[in-house]
Image (cartoon, rainbow, N blue to C red; front, side):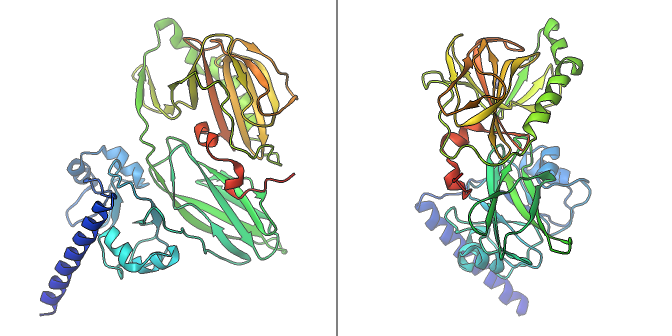
Amino acid sequence: MRFWTRWLSTLLGAGLTAILLLGMAGAGRAQAQTPSTYTVQPGDTLGVIATRFGVDLAALAAANALADVNLIEVGQVLIIPGGESGLPFAAARPGDSLADVAARLGITAEAAAALNQMEATARLFPGQPVRIPPDAPGDSNLRFGAVTNVLLPAQIVQGRTGRLAVEGRYPLSLSATFNGLPLGFLPAGESRQSAFLPTPALLGPGIFPVEIGYATGSGVVISRTFSVLVSSGGYDSQLIELPDGKGGLLDPEFTQPEIEKLYALWSVIDPPLRWSEPFSRPISLEYPTTSPYGIRRSYNGGPYASYHSGQDFGAPAGVTVTAPGDGIVVLAESLNVRGNTVLLDHGAGVFTGYWHLSEILVTSGQAVVVGDPLGLVGTTGLSTGNHLHWEMRIYGVSVDPMQFLEEGIGEWGVGSGE
Ligand SMILES: [Zn+2]
């Protein structure tokens, strides 16, 4: 009898969910047919699940941050890569029910139940992705110790840069890491500090930790770990065959010294932030993108272990390249791979780079303002034709610079003064 009742209520629940989803489809929010999550059933192996959904086993393991493909449990909810519903996710915390997550995000338990096709009372495992409406207010009320609020995006798309803001009862000596990457905090108001969350194009998809801590007067560090879902950027893949003669150009002996030189420069976090408006395009609009940021690359049939770290614009030799925002030139010289190179420090760990120039028009140490000429388009270094490669590094991580043509720093809650 009890079983029957439960079965009936499940049926009713499913019916209600179907009606709600139909209603949403009518409102233009239809979900893709591929489910984006899957609950592990008795007898399942990761290989069986990968086959069922037609996804690569390694990609499935990576999407769920599984170090060992044999370690999955019945009831565990897996993210199915490529099965995106187009809706953002929030990550459950230890002890959460679906209703708890909904309450924290300011959405109704009913809406959360319908979107996730489960009961509002369902218990979730820590980090379990929960689908939320695109207009959910966000997980905005997180506190621990003297930290009164943590503002963290529920998800970041691969290659994009998220924002973290932390508020304290008093000015805190904060530190934080994103998947182990140390972040740099900037003052963003009286009691608020802000940092970037730069996400590499090859990270995840999956759930990654943001650890936030502060040192107390006695030197003890109080910290807490939060979760961010990194979702797919949908980047294409590209096979690059280097001609016999040019393969040698990828030898570490040839490429390594300049990478080390650049890393030493762009890993510096030197406040204040010297730019606040959205970036202006570093090259005239008439020159289109020829190769976007993030495209995965395999050289001569090797693994897809690297990605295009910048945005390429096709332009003839001699076209002027300009500063997208205020900054200081920290490198202006000829390098083996990148050719004639200019690197700008925009402050607070944010750098932009300009490769393959035919001519450099600035010198190291020079301050530039938005619109100042930096150099001329060329094809110096490891390049097959005239183009500008525009790169952006935050705390040393290459991210999509195009995001910053739309978003100014004011919208990030980072102090714009100074
Ligand atoms: Zn490039």
